[in-house]
Image (tube, rainbow, N blue to C red; front, side):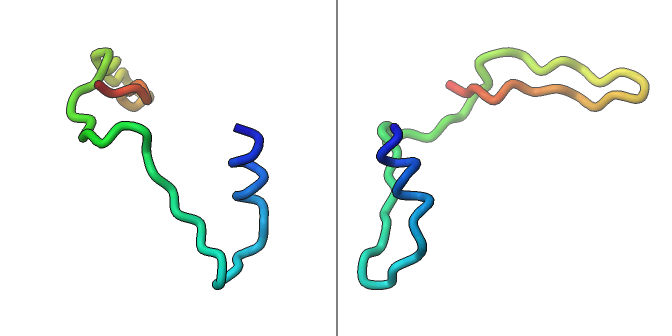
Length: 51
């Protein structure tokens, strides 16, 4: 993981492009947990995880 983070901190080099790929070639379509409904003065809250 540190190697990837170090790579992202390097300046842009047109002769050495960085290509990023996800480990799973699938579309995330559903939430893993139901959103928490909004309340007066607070927006709806959603989790960052999908399935």
